[in-house]
Length: 263
Image 1: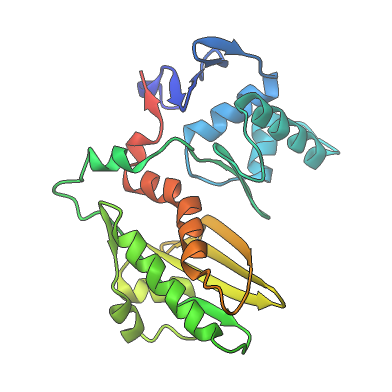
Image 2 (image 1 turned 30 degrees about the vertical axis):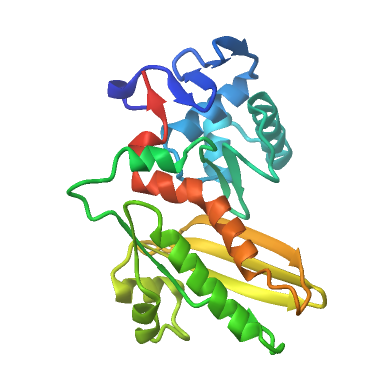
């Protein structure tokens, strides 16, 4: 930890002292196991960064051979989530990145934090929404995916400080067949939103990934499943839910300094 940033870290209703390992909620102490303290400190040191399970093994058990590491780490994560009132299914603070590890994301980050700081003099964070891939040849499926792509682009454009490439420009780059990372590089953006829409029997499922163009890393992911009926449009509802899930990460990318407030 950078000694120049010593002092309690605040997130939501919590305050954590990385030196003493003390966690408080509304100024009242919250009990943590020794390993949960270490895990919270590590995740808070570099918010939004994905910490792999192998890295966490070295942080939690340095120099030790741990035979049942996965079980041990799962118990620590569960213990920390309980202390924070968090859940793995709908995380507010600790997100599981499937197949990779964990990262810390705040639940409390709201749009007014960005509105109060309109990023004057800065270009903002640039992003492009790639055409959502429609899996299958069902009637109207391509139209639904195109509508969702447009709705997400329009909704993202409403976030202050976020520069979103117009759909007409994205289409002109002919990204079909390109990797999301290559498509983003061709448009000169920092991140791309890529997804797949699946219609299976009576269920419509959309999964989206926010991908860092510089290294191809997954910054965030969101998925929504809804019952589907041909006479009942749900495209906007699904798009709104995807944006709700990803909004905290997008806002934190715009202004990382607002992510964790310090004394």
